[in-house]
Structure formats: structure tokens, C-alpha cells
Image (spheres, helix red, strand yellow):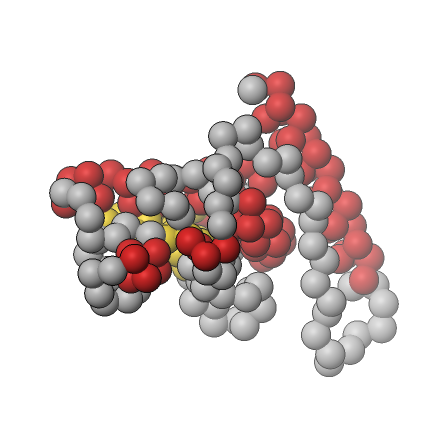
Length: 180
């Protein structure tokens, strides 16, 4: 496991270095008022502990950003399965794109963990924390400076959707990345 993590970290660093070289090389060209094309880094290897997830149980996964510069990738929550803090393949793909952006912009990030209403308050706060940490750890493993990443758990206290059914529970099992 440590060898895989070291290989993945080395691969990510090399990928980010190449992406930064491309971006900095593009800065030498004639200045333009048009927005630059985004450079996405390669996807890191998936962790061995991922779960199979169906689109019906997750909806669309992406990253929520409160980005005043308007340069962040698309936004929306990172969804989790019931009673799980394991990132899905779709979530990892989106977080990879976001991590490349956050790395180049040196963005300060706050990751929020949320749960549905089922479970005790204490359990849901702990699960929300594990979800926030899962997102933060992925971004940090990808190269985002850990001093720029904070996590907070809200458990069931800030639902994205009111209701007491499967649709509401699915919408509320999420992590959100906020930029400052």
C-alpha cells in the first residue's frame, strides 16, 4: 500500500510539473484577453478500497466552489453511499480536475462533510468528518498543500434537500469543497 501511494505521489508530482510547464510556457506567448484553456492532469490510480456505485444512487458528483475569481472547475457536491466515506470513481475524477486547479492557484480550501438524517447526532458528526477527510486526503495526496486544506463536519445539520425519503437522503450524503 505504501509503495502504491509513493508511486502515485511521484506520478502526480511529475504530472503536475508537466502541467505547470505547459501553463508557464503558454504565458510566454502573446497576451490575449481570452481565457486560457484548462490543462487537466492525468488521473491517479484508484484506491483499492473503492465501492461499486450505481448512477441511480449518486446523481451527478462534482465540486462546490465559492470562487470569487470565477476560474474554478464546475461545481456541485461529492456524493457518498449510505454509511460510507469511500470516494467513488466519478468523484475521484472530478476531484483530480479540481486538485490540478487548486494546486496551480494555491487556493485555500474548506471541505465540509454532511450526512443524511439517519443515525445519532454523534454518529453523523463522525461520519461527516470521515467524508470531509476522505475528500481532503485525496486532494492532499494529489499535491494540494495540506496547510491550505481545512475540514469541518456538519453531520445532518445542513441538509441539501428537505425530506425523509431515499431521494433526500441521497442528496444529503455529500462532501462540499469551498474555496476562499
